[in-house]
Length: 529
Ligand code: G4P
Image (cartoon, rainbow, N blue to C red; front, side):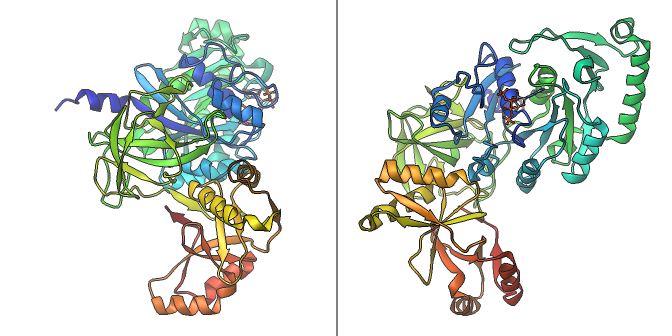
């Protein structure tokens, strides 16, 4: 049976995010991808942290004005018969739960590694999240225009530290000043590096075969032999690419290049649009939803406030999981059990925030949210299903909130409740006192909350240190045991912003001891919306 036009369109979608440690080159590579997608005319126009270059969209400009990058922007661009949706995952100090949750809305991931530094902390953490869903991963080893580490050693590190098999698809010829290009092991083709094409779509100079006279002319006899030996070594030491293993998240195809000098990125992108999965099925409480099902469904994975200073609304980012969104359609907001008419969703084609007429499975749309939408909310054509797997993560940072003006308690509580529903922070209210404790995964979340309380709720608050080291959501099937635990462990128990019982541990040791003492109680480090 041949595919319907709708199924063909869905099959063209490639929805992915980039994970990396700060400074590995995520921003730079994003910019080059947009260049190849014709989404920007000249690279160098996407925000530069230090250079303060122009932003591609007003949202980014907003971030720049505020000096922080808290959005998970979405960039859609066509490339080679495909429609690519790139979800930006903030990866700097402003690292937060948004980063994690964005990974629930993608079908695959590109991991960028600094060739000189190898595997770094943040990458390890983000990979752990990808593991939860066996997300397929492409790897780009960056900065070949510098003197970097031995490549085989870096591959080894990826295999052992990140526990994934590496299948090099391209291999660099030389590095630093002597960087000559990359060799495509699968196509037996050299792509020749040419300086000075960093901000344009570079020429694609190809040489077929390492044994060809052209290769000999470019590299010289000695280097050709060297490269051939190295390739043999690499092939013996690494794995061959296997599409199924990649799709299962067990093996990553590896590419080399330099994002800054704009080389090797296109070669990676060409394989990416071929191999990366089109929209995958998503789990709900009533079973999986297939992307080519024509009944519309979607879930909200992120809410962004104040994206446009002129409008005080918030944007809820929705991943469409099946069917088609069309302008003005009605959909069911499952949690509140009501139909809502969505007339003005925004889309993200070519980095512009423009009104969208239609979007399909795999695409992301932005809904204007006036406070009724929360992270994890499901929208359907009337069914009462709920998407699963959109987690809250146990925060790692905690602060107690104090009011400057004690008379504003009501506003403070309302503000914190709403901000926690939105996922901007997590709120914990201890059972045995009136403290309000905020939890965050990234330190910048606290500043954002403080600023938003001031701007949106007219509440001035201050933070104080609090003796909480980590939090765990408490579950127990046995009511009696749970009651006993509540009685005896009461001093460290709290209710979170969603109404769930939580153990807020003063130390890790306390947590382990408590876990040992109460074997029938589950202490979970994530909870689903
Ligand atoms: P990030 O988003 O992952 O944090 O990294 P970003 O792209 O901002 O890159 C971090 C730094 O590394 C930037 O330099 C960038 O120019 C540089 N860089 C990225 N790719 C390459 C590459 O292929 N080769 C080399 N040599 N450098 C690369 P910066 O000086 O910190 O910032 P900026 O002033 O260029 O913005």
